[in-house]
Image 1 (cartoon, rainbow, N blue to C red):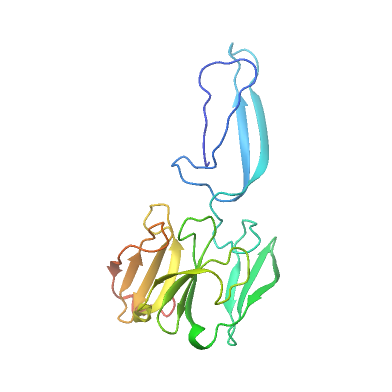
Image 2: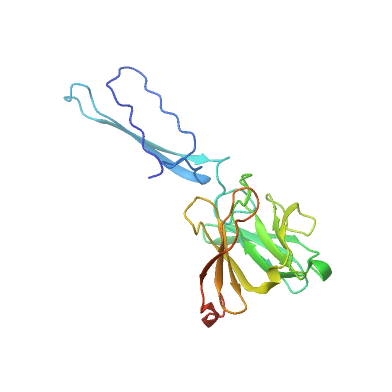
Length: 217
């Protein structure tokens, strides 16, 4: 259940309930299909209860996880080819759509790590974190289009080559914003909490020994 409403005191005639697209904690709900249900008891407790139910599609709220193209509330795949092409592959109902491709990821724009991320700056669209060969980390904003080096982006910062693995599990800290996890070359795992303004708070050490894993996702 995302949200529950109670009208309260007995009323006659038309009763209107409006939803602002937020959950019970005041956070924007995720775009996609929802079902609403209404139940009403009679004031005299003698007539049978009335039930109603229907579905609708929510848009303009929080983007669905990994939904970069199509704005269809379904997660998309992202792959980089050896020749420097970024391919988005959307899909639903067990099928994968045609590629949405963007080239140019070569030379100074060679990608050494890519993290399909959530909405880092709360602008309503998911972002892709890309680390270039220089160690610079950027948050690209595909907004439903192909991902290329000229796609609008915000610079996160430099020096990210100290990490051999970057990933995101979504909201790691429980504050409603997506976070970044990074493992350094000594096997220490660090957490970067998203600040909701397009960047991250200072790193927090999670613990050592993570070199036992070849890949972290």
